[in-house]
Image 1 (tube, rainbow over the protein chains, first blue to last red):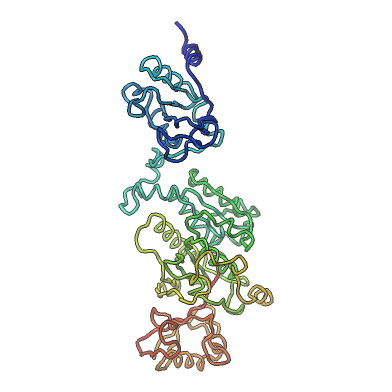
Image 2 (image 1 turned 180 degrees about the horizontal axis):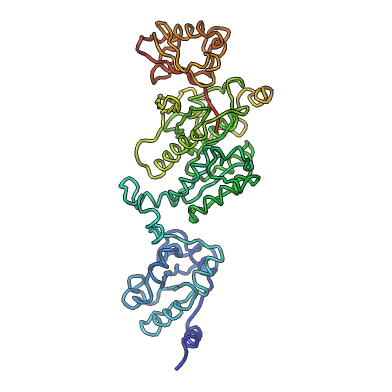
Length: 412
Length: 90
């Protein structure tokens, strides 16, 4: 009797195999949603119908990621279920598994025992497909680890499986890994936000540790983005961290923020807050904004065109003497924790679309008084930015206001 | 008497007071009464022409006075005024 390895070799000799690149080209060439009769308008496979792609692996393997559009027919159910994928014995079928062995055996079965005439097995399986950098669909299901990790979210009707998947697929950008950014990053990572971008060009200083809880003494002197990444991955290795060890300015802001679902503003200066506002209105990205000073905090959600923007609330920044962000100031170490977690809560509500977001409202927190005050914020019909169409906001206008940086610098 | 809530950046001008009681029939009168009690707030709240500085937001209870009648908005003794400058600490 032949060994298993010999059998697979013999089978591979008599079936047809196809490289992942050619499979990809045939799928691309057939165009979106062309279906089984889709003819290609260009590419190598012009005129050929798009192949039916069949994944013959086990359920858990399929759930971890598969070729977009693939039909799942586990090899153990091949004979009984293949007709669900293709009844037409002459239609082209490409089978794949993890590395190309199981799919070779399945192709042999389809040809010799079921009479399929146009069957190929993809060499190298999905492993090679991924190595080539081709797209993989991760279906809307959680792994066993995720079901366990997020079980307390799954029990909430406002989040549940659907909401958790939205979180896992979401991209949130944190401006600053400082006082506000630290707790936001930790809790959003814990909550399962799929991608966390972090913009910060600073290094960890020992004076940060009184409130910037994502950093530790061991990281003093390290870039904050590196320190934050390590803490996030310790807490939840499933989070994709994108680091921007730079300062946000007019030259890089659009490139950095584009593609994020929500932005968390914890920056420590007015010029960047106005710049951020103008860029996010232009790209229509909601901003969860907080600021802190001493024992006081402010919190609001600026959702472009649904509610007011930052300039509707604050048309003009204060002069330097009333804008202590220009210099160093005291802050209760707990305060950015309180405000940051209110921000994280608003971020999650926006992503899972639960509850009433803090749009058109400003919350003031006075830690000494232990009081919250809510104020109404209305859209300004004459707002220089959000009263206009987003596309009309030019690069030159973004972040502009009278000579603030010079004023701030002069005031020291 | 109305209550005026003083933001952190103005507290050095009010001797550290976080709330100040002030008289007045409208928003402008109440703020001018505040400035009489604490002269350092005058320049921070008002421009030289007597109008409210643009970077100072004033709320009557929870409503921005800009969408009411500005400094002419009537105020009763039970009302609270909130002075709110932008803050940018993070």
